[in-house]
Length: 461
Ligand code: SAH
Image 1: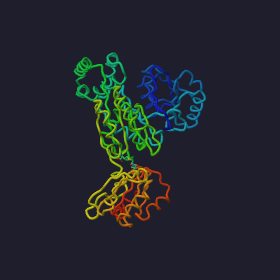
Image 2: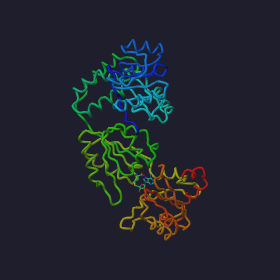
Image 3: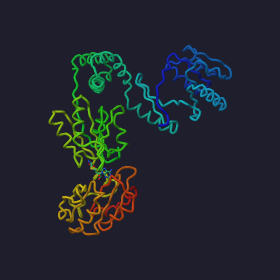
Image 4: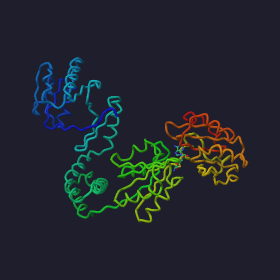
């Protein structure tokens, strides 16, 4: 992020605007909307601009810019078509640590103006840091279409009842929840329908009957294998609602970015031999937070019920009668297979698929190798990198053909996805030659060979 977004209060404040043409007029309109008092300095001025400034109690001086014009203003805006003047204003303002905006010259600016969606008091500012203004304007156009004009009135309603709601509820969480219910429910519908008085009455009734109590809940959500676009709509909605999130190592940064900004984030990551928090402690923490009335998001990589210990986490909640929801996610097997161009089943060569833990306890896995070595099935090993050599060895030992194709997918579905393809006889050597760290998924079976036929797929990986 190259610029930190702020909203600046300009009402009643003096702003210097140097320039008198079209661009200066556009800037003036925006600044006046925010209630600024304009001091315009220019050699020539458009009629419209002159009128705007005069009518709003500002001043116009028809002369060259002088550094003393920066006295007693909170912001300087340069909109002349003479580069040297713009540069001078920028340099003078910076020397005084005064925010300065030079139209169309991001390098001369300390503050830049965003594309704006105005549903006052709700205002959305969009910026590309000056890098892609057309894209920022496209986003604005999308938002303009998305947000009903009545959002401004909805924000007005929130403002009218702000104090009353504050008085009714003791904690910030309670207030937030009340508002979320109001702004997504029948009260908001009344506002959209233009029935503001009815909306007010309905809100008063809601406020009257609302109880000053909180009930926590837990959302056990599958965050998928990495690509944020693989999240379900439900996952995204609950990620936006939660007040605190417990996440682990497998949750990608891009997915975590989509959690509500002001939610508390607790890393409970687990890695082989590096348990930031032991499982019973995580279970207990979920319970404690919910009992404090929080809406808790337990965000897990892939699907919470596939090698995710999701079942254990909700057991304690169920015992304590804490409401919870479980949201499935795309498990690593589906994600990695799809993004690596490997169908997991195939009419001709794989009538079933198995998900297997490759986490071989005491290096002596309790797996039924004779069964796994049978043909006609695809095997997907989770957590199998360390045990790869042994897995390949056991499968061959128990009868699976040494030339059975194998794919190892690292960081599947992310931009760093790597696929190593080999056979049971050589996959371990091939993987050793590469710097593979994980997470990795191992797919064993004839279906892996189909990958080379799906050229347009493999080109991606
Ligand atoms: N609940 C998760 C699995 C947790 S077990 C799910 O449904 O996907 C952790 C293992 O999942 C890792 O060791 C690795 O084998 C696999 N895994 C998870 N994300 C992965 C990814 N993006 N690429 C490759 N393997 C992944």
